[in-house]
Length: 272
Image (cartoon, rainbow, N blue to C red; front, side, top):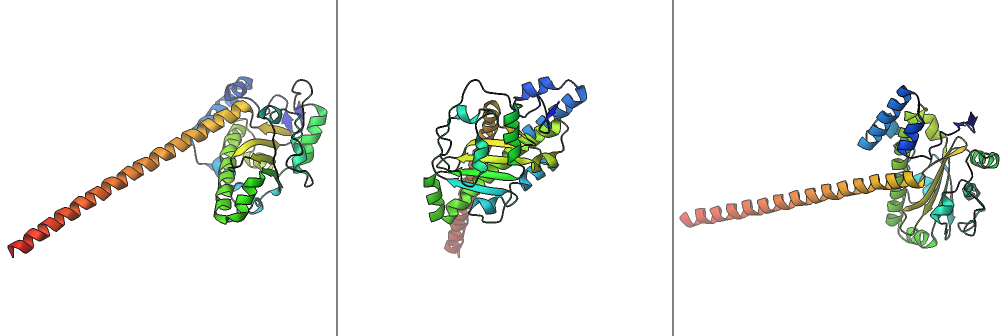
């Protein structure tokens, strides 16, 4: 049964093992494992190219419209304060953030009623579908916006940070989608995003929709995703440390060579 263009039970809202457990066809399961392995290896292929293309903006972008020119971007400056528990609910009305007249704090007082409903509930499907593809809503704290307005170089770093986060997430999500046999290009084009930033420009909360449903990230997926990012950060730090140590060794060697040359030159002058 398909609901809003997505097969029931096949939303991107499960962990790796949960998703794998739902794939009964052996060939599909093998494809999923292969795609997941590629993602874990950081494979650069067509999936990676598509994922990064949709996170590439104008050079030197200092605002989100230029950072994400392939999307219809709306920015809400203010102090959003949403708990992760509320944000992860299927009925959290995040779709309101796509409305230009909505303020960043508009949903701060929203409270759930009852258990978390399924995404397939008719009214939720209508709300998801109302968003449409190719849209992006970004919640920016006032203090962050003030710093970006005052310092273009800082603003560029924030744009690059959000672009990198989105590219990494899309690579994750698109790789999983490929494992299900989905057309990755069509899947990427169908997505819309809500990013809730903290005062340092980090993505604090995020919701991604695709073809009428929420694709993620779930709390479990977010933990795995953030663990990967931390592993990447540690690899970068280790690489930088190795490069610094190598540079220091070269500097010491050059100093030794110079001292040796100077001493030999002095000996030569003495013997003349």
